[in-house]
Image 1 (cartoon, helix red, strand yellow):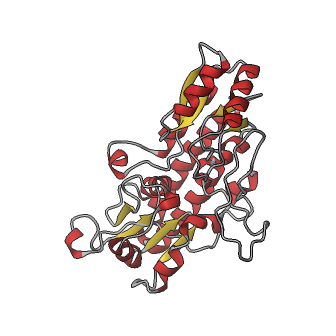
Image 2 (cartoon, rainbow, N blue to C red):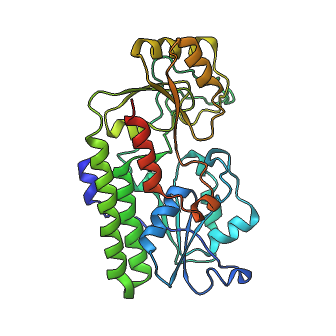
Length: 322
C-alpha cells in the first residue's frame, strides 16, 4: 500500500453537494457544489475545501440511512444532476448511480468513483473461521459462484485509501477553481499530514492483536492495514442480525481462549449478541466496546463536530485498550 501515497489518479472526481435548487440559495447557489454520498467522503471534501467562499460541500445520505439499502429520492436526483463534483463509493450498493448520471444537467460534472480510483486495493468480502454465512438470496437463474463474489465497500476505513482519495478530491477542486489552486494544495498537505500522523499511531500500536466483533464486520480495510487478526459474527455487508447457536458458541469460546478484555460491536448494534457472548464466555471483566464504521453518521452529527479523523482516533483508542 506504500505506493498509494503517490496517487494522483486521473479519474474525474466528484465532490457532492449542492444547494443548486433556487430555494437553497443561501447555502450553495452560485458556488462550486461538491456532493458526497456518505459521511467520510463528505468530511474529506469539506476539509480540503476549507474556508473557501466559492465551494459548497454537501452530504447526500443526511439521515444516517444504511448505504446498502439507500434509494435516491427525486430531490436527491436533482442534487446529483446539478453538482459540479460528485463523490461516491462505487460498490454494488451504488447500482443506482449510473442511471442518476445519465441525464445529468451539468455536463461538466467531475465524478469520483472511489472503488474505481482505488482499483487494485479494493478487497473482496471474506468469510473467516466461525463467521455465520448468509442464506442464499439470489434467484436460481444464471448463478455463477465466482460472479457472486462481493467487494467490500467500506474503503474509507483504510487511512491509505483516505490519503489517496484526498489527493483526487483536491485535484478536482483545483480543476474547478484554478484561481485558488494553491489554497487547496495547502489544505491537502495539511490534511494528509494529519492522516499520516494518525496512520503512524496505528502502525506503532499493534504488534500481535486479535479482536472479536459480535456484529457485522465492515472493518476489513482497517485490520488488514495494521495486521490485526479478527473473528466476527457476520461479514461486513451481511443483512443478518440474529446469530446462530454455533456462532455464539464459537465467539464465546474464542473470547475465553484469548482471555479477551473486550469484545466489539459497531456503532448501530443493540449489543444483544455481544452480551450473550460475554455471558457465555464466563469472563466477568470483559467489556463491550464500539468500533465506529461511519456508515450511519448523520449530517446533524457532522454539523455538531463529528469528523473522520476524530472517529478514527476513537477507534484506535478502543482497539488498543486492554
